Length: 383
Image (tube, rainbow, N blue to C red):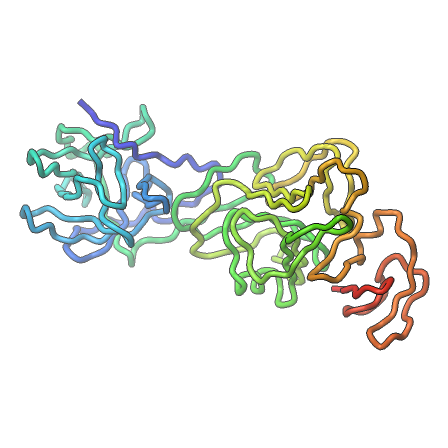
């Protein structure tokens, strides 16, 4: 009788290049760390960040530590706890009842991996099932040639982080489990506002490296009866929608590279303030009529549904009468540059901070250098 491990096979909809597939296995030894790969699937045991252990194109390093109770048994340790199983056979990384493992040589440098039930001194073997798409615990020892029950121990020195390609044109997304080098395909317009919603965190250093030292990232932080507010931030959190002003592009303005990425978001997180919702998307889809979208530095109010590529964002305003989206601010300063051109806006004289008039009857800051200006008694930023 075979027992289901509740060990989930991660079916990646994104393109994955499993660079470690050809890596040779090692003989497991006490005190060493390994990535444990199933020969049949070429997938690794991987901790999902929530205490579950799954199969993924990316692996979690596991350290062998001798168990004192029985010769030839080991603990498998990840960064947080022991790899183990509970009574209902769930494979965990945070303290199940059954936690002693044995490894028996199979063929071609592979091993059969078994979990020991110390209560009755019985063993169940890990093997992959094509029928269920997950790993089963089988009380019967597999044959030495059964690749579904063969596992390779890949050393940390031999393991290659797989590459994951995230495409803006994809129509589906499943949260990647593990650590990847990411090729992020998102076309951006230089030196103007773009929306961005990324499934992984982008640090301040990565932001500058990929999008330019002078790039600006804005977070939706509030709204009043008359305005919506955006505040500059120096890093992007996974799944949060932003406005991005890039000053540097990839070679084709599309492919951006991020190394050793983990902690992917399950889905975008909407940000809502005072009846305004900033909505991100990881996939190509349809934005409904009445939504607001950015394009070429202008904010448009849709009168019909519109297709939108992935890793972008749009805004939705509750129907409350006068729109707040005709006036938006950056860090407390009203930003009219580029945005007000898509609304009916009264022209104003523009002054520099010394009180000198620099433009007459203007509806934008076009033609002026970057800096702060006074428009209708308010400070205005030009990027």
